[in-house]
Length: 83
Image (spheres, rainbow, N blue to C red):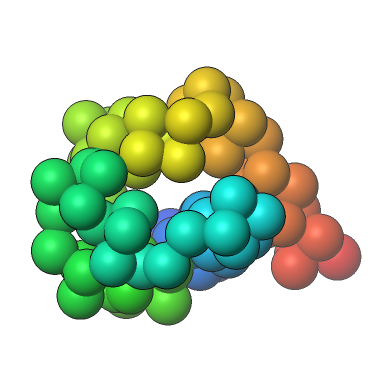
């Protein structure tokens, strides 16, 4: 059985946060790079919102990584959560 939407949202947020911290970026700096509000970045990282594919692409661009890296990381985190 696949991961629930909530598990995936939380996993995506965790993956995004890990990448952001690895790059040494604050939420504010990432938000500026993505042309998004810092509170929206925070909400995504906490799994409170389910960003569109366009927003996930903007976040990947802001992190200077391919989108598939974020999705793969989120998938792995979600899979580990289910076990």
